[in-house]
Length: 509
Image (cartoon, rainbow, N blue to C red; front, side, top):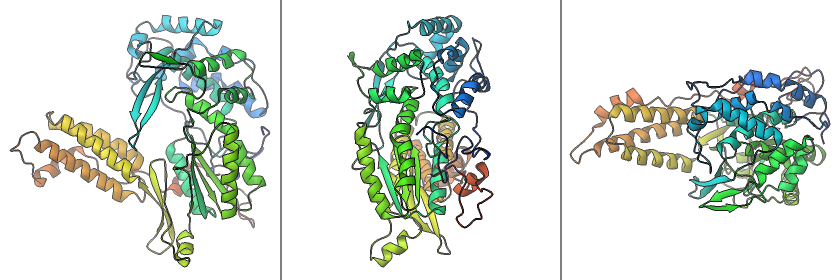
């Protein structure tokens, strides 16, 4: 399970050479500081990300050399400098936890606070506080529960994530993308598009684990951690966070299962859990049981699996349900679908007298089987319609609340919103929806301006220059997936022109 070998035999970019002598499939990019920290006056010695990485270089190299090594001494890496660096990675404007301490208040006496926190952590006197329960609306109208940790818990967790990443980033497989340094949602989308376009994918399984973060078994979590972590102090720290529980309306609930969504360390723990429950298992399954091509992309608890043969897809879905049940998990019945998809799906369904292929949603985009003008297959990615409508409604309501503000202030806010929206959604084949989004934003803005007075009327000839000044153009901001994928991750091996061409280990698995 832990021995050296290819992390993924197909299209997923790997972080390390997969076999001795092979070039690395991907260079890990550094991550900048958290938004809002720029311009903050530093009150304590802090490390850069490069310095943090160098301090953990020996841990990283040891983890690379021996996949079975258990690290028995890690707590000495939790230095005051690392804790201070972790503090500056937090968002200054984030909501406080149950202790009510804000980022600004803690920064007033930062040196003393960090030194005191470090002493408590090292001598075992540090106590994790329960998370404050807060709910945020989901696109489908339901409420998502979040756990807001206390500030000191965030600091220690952020530092611990950096220490553990030095180990687990060498273990995680190439098709795992969620919440990992140097990997983004667009990396996962590019790998998926590249796999569907290049590999023999005829069936797609869109799988979602039901209430994953709420169903993580603490017992299994600690057993998985013990594969690599032998430092009892680190294990006790993580156990404290898991058992801290939540505070809701003054009532405390002990944490017996799950990990709070919103906690700094929860994404890493989720990746570790799924690494052992899903990633290693699916990698072995497709090598031993699949009769045709299988590609895999996982982002957090959302996974897309592509198959060449329908029999493999049926067998995989059945085996996956059994595998997840062993660890107290199950698939969401409404969000898990097996559909016919790929280059030849439309042709095969047409012969059978069926309608065009179904679509699936992944990371904010609806994936569609389309055609180029010359009739060749093309994977279309469009913004999920209901999410686009929800965002427009949010903008409309905000504009009506701020319609009394000066036009430049409204324009600056709208420009910021649209630049952020286009930075994510302005991908090739999505120009129609991004253009429509910009048009409807301007339309809502015009109506909000006319609400200033019952007699006010803003004609379009007057509105267009105002929009041209503040609203960015709805142009495509991302290259084609295969273009960016190949530029960032050169794929071809020296033997690629052999009878069975292979793609250098990495991507869509």
